Image (tube, rainbow, N blue to C red; front, top):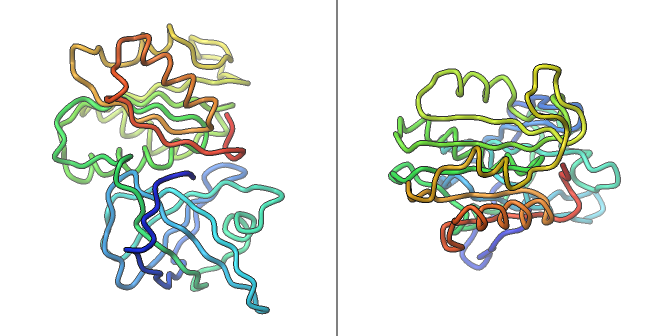
Length: 251
């Protein structure tokens, strides 16, 4: 996932997998022990480096899915069939296996528990990952900032963190969750399969008068569209933070 890296100030850490959890048929969440990990803010990301026996290395960037939890962190990785790193992470890595992690990276696309303004979160596909870190951080801190999540996915089966999101929304503590389906909607959905549009954004986003801050994450085209709809709704560009990625996680 794209982001502003400041590698000169960062360190590589040796991480060991302690838990792998299937999120969808093509994505897994991975929890690592990372001795010496300095902690992170919700919305930051890391570089993951794998080393082959012959010395070949491959590095990929992934958003952090977890709230701060000491020397542990969670990533959620989507399988890229032609990828070098994601097939190993999603399907092969076993508990205790090590890899190298650089981070935390990024200081713009973050949310901190002392923020009080409403947070409008808009995710496309795997763009939910850094936004989930924000939702979990809010919950962990007992923060009172109102949150609204608009999550665009291909189908119900493609939803990351489905049970957790529904439980958090049902808790009625200031988090509202809306799913938008692009290819297959459940029978009880009030909106058929279609991409996000201006009416959907207008119906689900905080009013500009509430002084919200928006975080939008997903494929480049999705982010550009969502940002345009927010602008049409009156959001100032300075109140819209974006994180985008290329061919992965299209919704």
